[in-house]
Amino acid sequence: MKMKRAIIAPVLVATAAMATGGWFLQKGLGQEHNVYANARLFEDVLRYASEAFVDKKEPSELYRMAIDGMLQELGDPHTVLMSAKDYESLRLQTEGDYGGIGVQIDKRNGWITVIAPLPGTPGERAGLRAGDQIIEVNGESTKDWKTTEVAVEKLRGPKGSKVELKILRGDAEAPIPISITRAEIRLKAVPAKYVMGGDVGYIELVSFSETSAREVKAGIEELRAQGAKGIIFDLRRNPGGLLDQGIAISDMFLKRGVGDEGSHGRKQPARDVTHGRPVSGSADGRAHRAAVGIGIGDRRGRTAGS
Image (tube, rainbow, N blue to C red; front, top):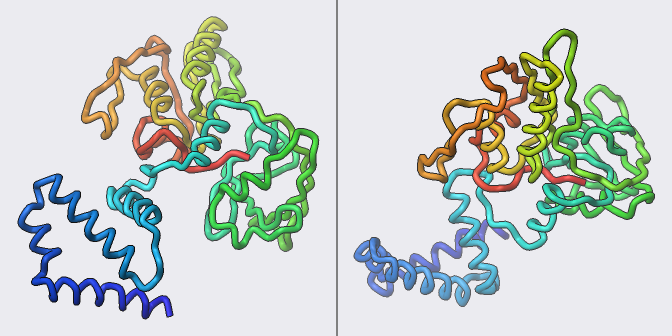
């Protein structure tokens, strides 16, 4: 039935266009460089779709669909319009503290999937691993959960409360039940930094949050003070995050500043806080792209924290 409706709607628009002498097309082709004419054309099409489409569509819904479609056409999956609810979730992930189990999650292959458990959190202590598929939360199947926001709401809760999970793991023959007691999740971008054997420093960055650049800079200075002559920079558990933090951190290791496509080639001045010391990086593709300031089109990561 939906397929028939999808066919009927274009037929109605085409019929109307022919009946009016191709008005829609003439209007667009004749004045395509006139922003006011294009705005008028858009309003006319939106009003016609609202009034004549076989399924009732409110103008507010059509505006949202138009915005989503425009951003989708840009070809960057990270450039989206954030709702107030999405923004609050982002704020909690990158700035605040919340009650939860401490894992980064995303929708993968139809299931809510653990991207990375945050160090020192209930999720890590319970044994959750990257790639685990969460198939049940408190007895409720996650199969029909279309977004990670639903999972975030279910996984977060008051400190001290319990959440019962069932997960699928690649090497397990049956779902694994896991009971986790929620705790206050304090976001710490640099959970580990120390001097290894000899004079090699190690620093781990697990997220690009509001404090990441500050924490990395302080960590490097601390390692230098302890005599580190080289640094291993570990990004393996980093799922991504804020673009400006990725750029700021990249600039710490470069002689020339990093620019991004959205800045039209403008580059920030680099500040090599390592003072020429050798640096060895360890990262998966996603974290590496975030670190060098590409592959992220807005200020949010593609994963959700719970």
